Image 1 (cartoon, rainbow, N blue to C red):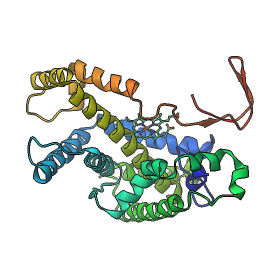
Image 2 (cartoon, rainbow, N blue to C red):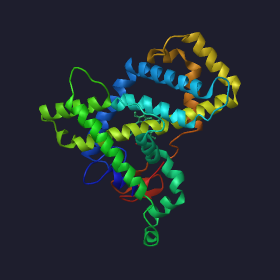
Image 3 (cartoon, helix red, strand yellow):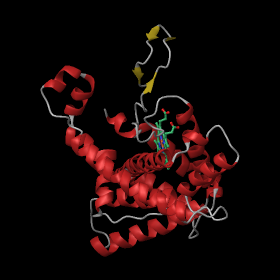
Image 4 (cartoon, rainbow, N blue to C red):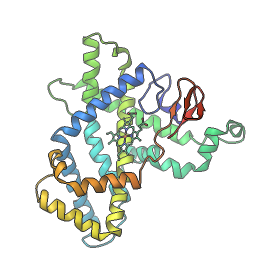
Length: 294
Ligand code: HEM
């Protein structure tokens, strides 16, 4: 049911799409955008700016050496990092759009609880209960409208020589596909590209903010490891802005992040995938159209 909100007669996205040309084309262009950006110098600059703003906000609001709840601040920080990379937008913690993004990417789970699972997997129960996704669907429509507006203003001001963010990369892919008459052209509709931008933002913020919160929690519980992280950063980076090229020298930091992703994986059963043909997986027969999670 949730997937139908992302893939319908109006648009298709990447995360909830079935395998096919649309999924393949949108996925490829999004991955290219992520890979290019991950290696560029723009990413460390954005991270540095947003982290500084967040630290200032914490100090102004809570003072120094005082306990505070980091959850919303971390979500806001990651929303600002990913938002800048994806569509050059920053948010305020109280902003209506961010509250709705947060509901659709994370809060709906605690709001709906078991009812969503029952409604999704036990069709009979739908005769006796109201669709639990009404609020979700309303927020999702509002978010899509917000993203379509951002997409439209990017489209109007697009300049091939100045690629500002992922949104521009996707618009560039659309222009190239149309100009060169590529087979992907029909799949790069404005609506599909906006839905993919939504995927990049929602997928990126929820996963990284959850991981970051676990990292903070473990550093607070284990000051010994926190100190080792600090020592390595002071020794290898000092006061300069960390760059992607510094990663090979930050062995302890990288191991800490990898271990955190393993130990407290934010997407522990991954995203379900639908079998497009009946297959045997080991001794298990997976029938055509069955949704599986590994
Ligand atoms: C801690 C960080 C992250 C984790 C743990 C994570 C995890 C995942 C997982 C498990 C999938 C499903 C893959 C599959 O089964 O096919 C996925 C897909 C995806 N993620 Fe992430 N992700 C993270 C960060 C990000 C970020 C920062 C972005 C974008 C800015 C992003 C964008 C996407 C997109 C677009 C997809 C769907 C495309 C595909 O299937 O390849 N993710 N992610």
